[in-house]
Length: 411
Image 1 (cartoon, rainbow, N blue to C red):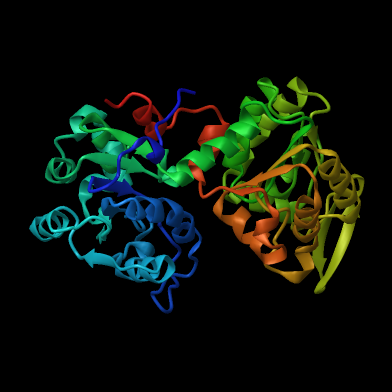
Image 2 (cartoon, rainbow, N blue to C red):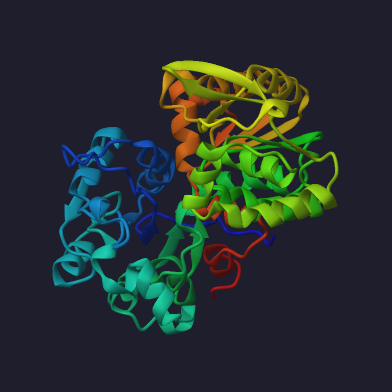
């Protein structure tokens, strides 16, 4: 991958900098307040370095979407959080690219920081517009956001890896009009993921689970064909689909759950992977169900059972713990079971403890993955926690990311 310029390549003093970050955060439905500040925390190094270098800094960011309307709120609380964490004022204006926003931008002094309101209050920034309009980055320079803001800045900086799979104007169009650079987080994300996908220390182990198995299946062919992963351990619904592909009947509860969510469409694909990559994909050898309020473990050879499978069993845990301990690189996406409930949390708990204890390089990403890790271990015990979900999966699947394409040839 071609080198992306960093903020160390910029002369910041007095420079008018437009910074795109991803501080899209979960919103508590009861209080309407930010429920998790991880992405805000991850944005701090770049903001601190730009403002500390004397830039006249304006920040743009999104929150929620039309498909995620509960989280589609203004960014005033985000500005308050940034002010508190940075120890310096972060101004806010409830305007995105209109007259009020432009006036505040023009008045900024060196070292001052301003956060504009939610980008997704603009139609051209929501995901449905991107999918329907299909504009090129050059065509996006004519959008309301870009034509109003671009003349006010000298440099564009992007630090929003978590949105790298989005081809919105705020992500890919400003590079057409001015010098640009990547922020601290973008550089760290790419370095960590290159350590997994590019030239990982061996053996390289992927642990794939959770409910959103489209993520796992989008990665499997790439990492196995390219030889990125020496072995894949499957858990969660991914593991159950692999068991079905291998000819095991799980029982009515699990098979109905999978069919109701149309996840049975992955069974033929799983069958092909098992055939094409013999010995590379490991499946659970025992599983757990909840019966009469108690956890009951069952060997896969004794399946099917009526109850839904909710976790991997203790024999599988022990085997997977050994594999994790022996790995030099470990990537994890998805919990092992229904970790929110005590009777089905043990697999996730033990695997996270194993990842935290390993001497290998560990990288994790995805919302549910990070949440489950935070429940059972100190996330600082993981070498790198990616802010990306969709962007992370697309990167490891070998799919192009609009942001990276723009940062490697936008101007």
